[in-house]
Length: 91
Image (tube, rainbow, N blue to C red):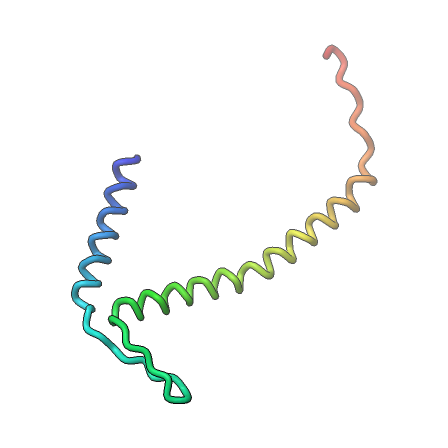
């Protein structure tokens, strides 16, 4: 299984290198107030892809934390209501 995992990683890496080689020409990003940034196209694409992934993770993190707090509160409510388990004979 490790060989398959490493083969997939190598294939993805080679595809990214080929993508970077094909998209190396510089692009200019123009912002407000006359601010401009010139960078290779592949760098801009990867930066925006990474920023989108980060925003997606952050968007999912808030409901997840809220659910974990709610589960912990519900467990505290259930714990005192449960009677203790009787001892098992023969142990």
